[in-house]
Length: 161
Length: 159
Image (cartoon, rainbow over all chains, first blue to last red; front, side, top):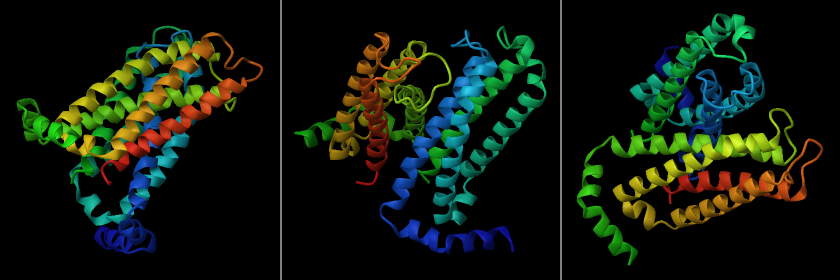
């Protein structure tokens, strides 16, 4: 099976056709997606801001991530589900759009950025948890903020094509 | 009357220049969404705290003191980006009942947020022991308004 045949098959599924033909399912999925992505981006930005040294400096970085990241993961699950359902309704078209590809690539970059931060930069986090984060940590925070702006922008652009 | 206002607004040089740039509406809407992210995240976190559904993190008073200035700044960004979008496509907004519903809901949210801020500053919204009844009501209403506003905003495109 090629990518094209897989996408076509997906588009022909009962769920996909129901969403494509319903007057209310897609807008509802969009609304859920917006609420979920708002929390994904808002919560990630909170951690990024802390890494950059803005706000809540009285709390350690590990404290901030421990309380904020559960929000991020829950919301990401909802965003992923709602996004996947919307995707199925016009799978072939969406997959071919460059904003869609950039959006998916950016989320992959965000994941890599997060992994690099967690496994490399933050290995000695106990040393700077309460103080000034090293340049690599600030870089990770800034990169993350920018990446998610691009995710939101390309995501919105898809809706215009 | 609104129809005439929309017709006039759409022909102003400012509106025309915004309309002629294909990227303008998507970019301003993106800014609008990013500001929504800040408002929704910070208020939802405060609301769940006031509802007693979360207990970790800073004390509600500290949480509110840290969050609310950002909420007000983001609301200002929402207002400015919203005005720009309305100048660009006046009838899409001003001649849609759902837009006016959204505006009423936004006014409601601003009022509730003022109420939450006041309760929290008097430390009667939530303490480390138990959330107050008033705090729970405001928290629940705030959450409901956030969902309704986002829904109304999205459905403008479909109604």
